[in-house]
Length: 98
Image 1 (tube, rainbow, N blue to C red):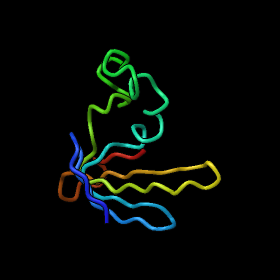
Image 2 (image 1 turned 30 degrees about the vertical axis):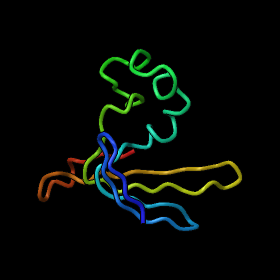
Image 3 (image 1 turned 180 degrees about the horizontal axis):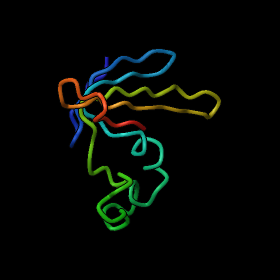
Image 4 (image 1 turned 135 degrees about the vertical axis):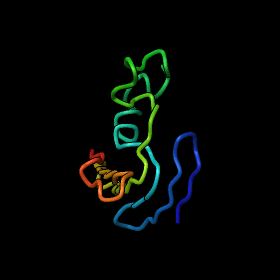
């Protein structure tokens, strides 16, 4: 079982040979996969982030009520996805997908 409380995230999850599933408030997949390849996500920090961090490479916002899957490394290939449920009762159209 995984648990983390870092900056804007809080999640719990399970990990196995097929990958990792985490639930609750967490960063989207852009932070996980593109952030380490960008100047904003590595050595440049805020100075190299885009205006209003509209791509989230600078990790300024996280998605609440989310479930995220991250695969294990398969011959150098990894993938993942995230679904953020609505914060409103019955509001299934008000959500986040990446």
